[in-house]
Length: 547
Ligand code: GLU
Image 1 (tube, rainbow, N blue to C red):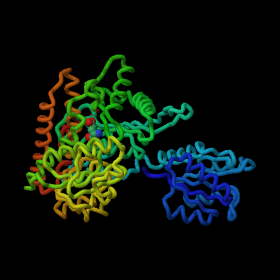
Image 2: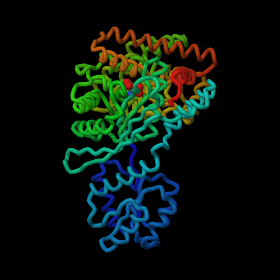
Image 3: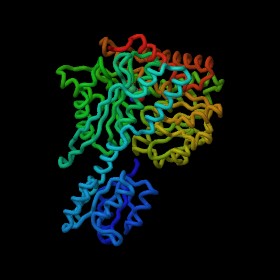
Image 4: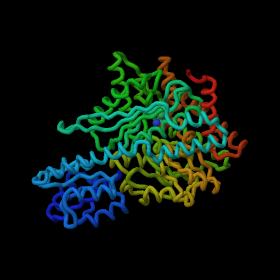
């Protein structure tokens, strides 16, 4: 998890030590603090380093009173400032808040919780005010779209229409922490990118980086993904800006129920159907479904997919993204004339997508030589066993310390030799900085947005086969579609039926993309995007414009 970087400007060493200690104890290792004594040391540091917040004493050896705040604000106005003040200087501190400081803390009365909250709140507010649309991921999704639009000669009206989502909802929602003292307020989103194709579809992500821009990028990818797979859905996505690993089950449940209530007007079985994504799972979907059902007065299983099977979830949904990815790897390997038996693979990320991809690769006879979770990467050229890794994870909760492998960082892992590299964790992993160093032959994207445009060009030049995210991870939403259809018909399918239908849809999409790529000499990502965009464009033109 990224730490909150704080610069403390305080000339009294006793105070500085006290505050540092409080933050260390109450901050649970989530803060990183630097300390300077004077304003003329602080300003250059703020300008040249990345800080998330400043703790500022107004009375310093080289500056006094409001002028201290004003000079700092003039130099780095975008960084939130929390003023440190003595009891006798309260008016001054209040004046600084009027001028733009975020808050003030009275020395001698600061406790750890108050300090942590003031800093968190300042960072949260700044993020909301300055960063909502300004997201690297949205930029990537838009650039990919514009590149594909350019190549396919997409009508300028449609280009403009599809560049931003059709509907966005931003909510703030409170939930009670288990101590029954704190009520935390967080930001949540639901975004519908295209409403033309039918109900909208897409997961809900709980992650501390979630923003309107990020959710919009993910919603846009869902549109292309559903269209490419020929599912009758437009793209959507939702999210809450929170780190769920720091919440208890009760807190997660209260958060989910309140979030559902806040977005309830936007979702529904014929409107917009959520599903799991990073940081959410079957449990969260069950609470979402229950909350929705409580509000309308009867049980509505089809409002969400990725539910537990006993509540109307589909067999095979949990494994679907990993399974679908491996179906495609089989097709790609075939096209590349690379036998899968004895080929080697590295899988980054061991959540739902990564662990299942690893399992199905192993079943296909591939040797897994590298894996990772958030804490560490593991490498063993002799091979790793998925069941041993799962057993270790069940016992230790992280891969750290796994005995039968060399520990490497997540970044190193990507650069190790293998035939198949499957990024199944986060966005923005393969960049201009490391694309040159990859040693794989096939890049199979289980995550959304793992590769930048710059990296794409390098990979293409180097002849690395890319299975792009909108195709690679589409198995999840495809079985979500099956779940929705089964729910709508009140009829369940067998696992064999689900897997064989999934395979057919994945393989067909692979071959359509491959045909387009060969015909128009395109890289696989551009071909997949064009495949999706073309269908949406056609539907939009056929429906015509209202009014
Ligand atoms: N969150 C998954 C994705 O990114 C699944 C979405 C769904 O099943 O609706 O594709």
